[in-house]
Image 1 (cartoon, rainbow over the protein chains, first blue to last red):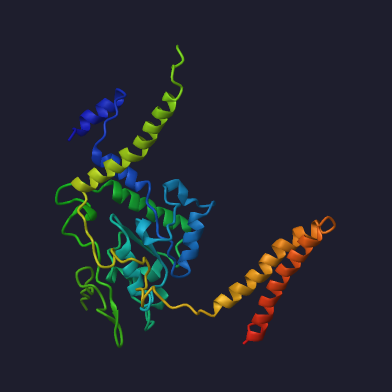
Image 2 (image 1 turned 60 degrees about the horizontal axis):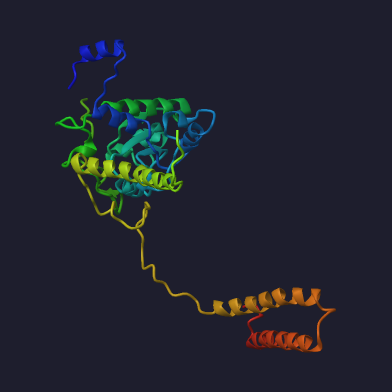
Length: 203
Length: 125
């Protein structure tokens, strides 16, 4: 590994050095392909972000793939109903590694304005590992772009080897998460305990 | 600079470059996955049909054989149209033999139509 000081010194002299890790992450961060997957009104903002005015193409993410097999990023854009939750998890499972999740809007984060609804999942993080969350109801396309740049930062910071390496490079990290079943009153299980624990509220 | 004596050499070079252009990235990706990315297959990932819903039932379903009648009637009118147009264009210069042959052909097709009519295919059920 090259010393940072030597590196900047070399750069001043016009010699650019890089590492395999950086090239790999640079390539990945600039070609994140989202899944064409809208659940509710946030999807409209997502569509707007991909169009000419906001132009997600500047970040290499204009290629919304209609198949999970070709996608790297799942933007959970909207209210996840309990009917839809198993489908969302299954779609995530079908995506190839490396894969990332953006929870877009209040509904995807926590259920949002429909939190009291009997049929609304109170946050997709109960079943999926969320990388970036965007608050808002709905968030504006700029917010999605910001979330996207945050994700790019996360990707460029990921390690290739060692205990801190990216999840998809760790043979022990799961690639699939259990798909909830429709139960009599709620989804079975109501959350994935390995990913999400109910917050401990002290009164 | 001299012109190469065999001008097809350029094609060979182009061929080699084209194959390398496709093969080198694929090989690199394969090597990368071998050294870095662990394979993580799973039930959903290996599913044949990529969809949020699980596929149900068999892809080998039975098809209603009644549709063949529609296909036959379509063929009757289709073939008729194809032959009637050149027949009409060259009608003036036709010999008696050709005219009779065409009429026999038309009769055969009309016969088919009458048969279908009697079978009740033309009535909408």
